[in-house]
Structure formats: C-alpha cells, structure tokens
Amino acid sequence: MTIHKFLDLGSQPIANGFLNQEDFEKEFFFNLGLGLDEDTCLVTQTEYVTPEKMFNDSYAYRGSLSKTMRNHFLHTKLTLSPYLPSHPKVLEIGSNDGVFVKNWNKETTVAVEPCSNFAQETNDMGYKTYPEFWTSELASQIKEENGSMDLVYAANCMCHIPNLHETFLAVKKVLSSDGLFVFEDPSLAHMINLNSYDQIYDEHAHIFSVTALSNLLEQSGLTIIRVDSLSVHGGSNRIWATHSESSRKVHKSVEDNLSFEKLLGLDSLSIYERFRDKVLDSRYDLTSLLCRCADNNKKVISYGATSKSTTIFNYCGIGPDLIHHITDTTPEKQGKYSPGVHIPIVAPGGPIEPSVDFAFLGAWNFAEEIKEKEEDFTSRGGLFITHAPVVHFV
Ligand code: JHZ
Image (cartoon, rainbow, N blue to C red):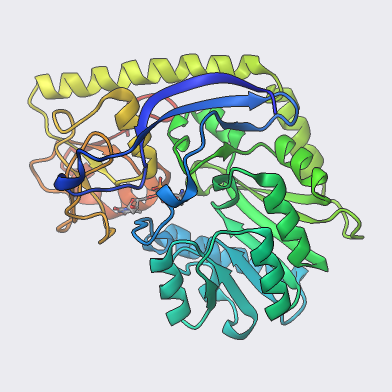
C-alpha cells in the first residue's frame, strides 16, 4: 500500500465511547487522518484503532432505534429474496441488535457480532450468534457447523475492518458456489459531494468507492455484479458480489458506477485536496455560527449523539460552552458525556423544550424522520442547523 495522506482531523477519541465523568482523565485519543492508496484507490485511515477498543461489551450504537433503518432492513430482505433459494442459509457479519436478522428464519440464519452485549441479545432472540470478530478461522468453523451460506450480508461493517483481503477471503470460504455476498457502507462519492467529513471516525477504517472495492474484491476471487445507491446514512452503496467464477450476470449498475467515479476523479489526489479545503471552510463556518449564537444568548442543543458528531465536535473544538446538551433516544448513551468534548447527553423528555432556539443535527441522516417528530419545534420558530453540504439552517 502507498498511502498519500490528504486530511488530518486532529486528535480524536473513540467515536462511540460515551463516558462518565470519572473516566474523563483516562480517555483514549488517536490521530484521525485519511489517505488515498495509489495502488487500489482505497481511501483509508492513516492510523487504525485496535478493534477491541471500539467494539466490546459496552458498545452503545443500536441500529433498530430508527424507523427509517427498521424499514430499510425489511426492504433489503424483500429486495434480496428473489435472487436466493426459497429457504436460504443466511449469515450476517456485524449483526448489532438484530435489526436485519430478525427478518429471516431463525433455523437457517446465523450471526457474527463481536460486541457481546448485542451477541447475547440476538442469541436470546433465537438467532445463533458467534460473539467474535470475523476471521478466516471463524469462517471455517461456521462452514463446518452450518454448511455453506447462500447469503453473506453485512451493513456498516466491512468498512470497519482494516484488513480487507483476509476478510474477503474468509467470506469466499463460507459462500456457496452461487451464493451472494451483499454489503452496504457509506459511499465515498456521497461523502465528497455532501462534504460530510463526519463519516470519518475511528470505526470507519475506510470510506469505500466502487472502484476500490472492485479492485480489492477481485484480488480475493470475488466480483461485483450489482451496485444499489441507497439514501440511508447520508448515501450508501449496496454492493452485490459473488465468486469470480460464478455464472451470475453482471448488472449495468456496476459499469455505471465505475464510469461515474472515474468522471468525478476519485482515482486521483486532486479531488481529495479540494475536499480538504472544503472541510476547513466548514469548520470555520460552523464555529462562527455557534459563537454568534452564544454571543446572542441563544440556546443550542444537538440532536442525536452520533459517531459523526464526535468527529465534528472534536475537530471544530465545540464543547458545552456552545452546545448546551445532546438529546438521544439510546438508553446506553443517556446520562453520559460525549467523547472528547464532554457535552452531557440527556434522554428526550418529549418534544424539544421551549427554551431551545436551535438544534444542531448530529443525526442529519435522519433529518426527515426528526423533522416529522419535532413539528412543534419548527412551528414555534425553532430551527435545525446542519453542516452538510454547507453550514445552514434547515
Ligand atoms: P446514526 C453508527 O454511526 C456507528 P452514528 C456505526 N459505525 C455506523 O457505521 C453507523 O452507525 C451506521 C439517535 N436518534 O445512525 C439514535 C435520536 O436520538 O446516525 C442514535 O444514537 N432521535 C455502526 O452514530 C443517533 O441518533 C431520533 O429521532 O453516526 C443516530 O445515529 C433518531 C432518528 C435518532 O449513527
């Protein structure tokens, strides 16, 4: 790998490491940087955080808390089913709280989840869950115990794994001869177009382009046969891959995406250098806006204690002096403080309280769902603030 670093987001904590006051002193930080690998076009971090520091028995993110995501995973099942045998064997890697697996048959579905709090939950739901990281050894064990899989699925998980070659080889090992390997993660093209630099945090070891994935999967004996553009998580790609020797037809969307990315220039450094300049502008605009709010005694909160907002707040130096508190529906985050800048996180006690003037959308990817829920806030003149694609009121 020959990595050209193009972005430095400074010293950052564990993005989902919500903490208690007594743990402030021992908080872990690392340098968050992004670079382009000139061999594969992979956009990847310049320093990976040890997986166990991020994914452990106190992991806080729950995929099932938003209606958008619950519907998305049900729809994913309906999309994939026509391309699978009538009683498919399904494996999910990174099953979180079971928001995807719960749509599939318990007898023929297995899951892998290294965060043991969630592995326990899906086991209790009746889905056999291996509480481990995805490795070649685990792939062999799963194949021996359950046979080959018709579908290997992963949502927002592949981009979390530093060593992709080993990961993809392990998938190939467990995939049936005509099986599908389907995974979805935030799209690099969307991140660049939306200036959503907050997609970059410890867990996202890579931000995927179809170009890079095509190169990497081919090196592991897998071929992309279809790409779906998804609106979830600020714009994601769902990649469908299979054994390179399979006779499954390659869909037109593969070539369309590769050509689009070539046109955009995702294979050369200059687009990333322009992106870096826009990230700097975004920091200036957001901090200026929040300082003006503070100078005018406006109360600003943040909506959604997201991993993404950890990046923004730490990169921009935004703390409790500018954001009064963060509201979040996740029980595991409530009563704690946000990583690095230590803004208190509170449970929403109903709609946004009348004393609040502005709410920064930490969960901007759920803007529609949130605006629908918080109609009272906007109808009494409250405004949301977002940074993507430029800092503005919504
Ligand atoms: P959300 C996580 O990122 C981490 P985050 C992970 N690495 C990843 O890849 C993506 O997810 C997929 C709350 N909320 O999904 C719930 C409300 O409070 O943008 C969540 O804590 N009220 C696995 O953390 C957060 O916002 C609401 O009405 O950036 C949303 O987190 C809604 C809709 C959400 O992921």
